[in-house]
Image (tube, rainbow, N blue to C red; front, side):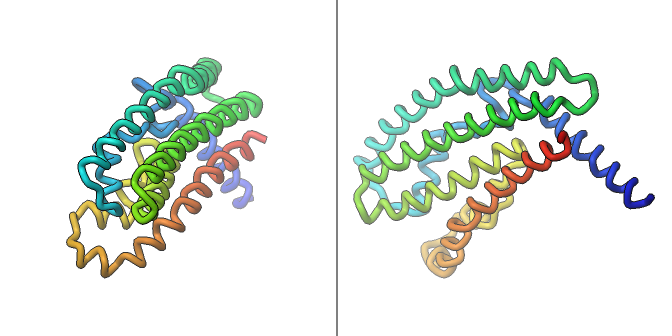
Length: 217
């Protein structure tokens, strides 16, 4: 009997989280808290400066590539992301305090997966263009930056304002403006975090969605 009560309580908690999350869709421009925002130029520069030594001419080329990236994101925002937001609005409009139907939830999460995947593809194109611009040696650092962005984007997509960016160990380390000697001392640890955490954060994102759908079933 106690086990049944605990199971029912767990189901209610999951449903509450799902409904609250759905109500929080799409504040302001874009899809805040549901779809990763594009990387700003300052954010991009800070990320690259962790791993790549670039001169002014490199940055001029990267800034031009970044302008194209933002233009592509605007197209995505006006198209697929706007359609995704409409799915979210329809889901909220049908909410009566009960768990949304499985069909509506599946439509919502299918649209969510699609737009998050589109953001990832835009990011991949941007990093590939930068890597082709800066040369083979610097491209290794660009790859490390790409892995960090992938993790941050997935964390933002699944947790919104509670992004892992402010709590991940490597971001915390870089926020302290370490010296070159300090970076060298822990670089192997940083590489391990960069290579493993994108997969782990992605697993959290997928698992969260599947848990909600499982309750609805």
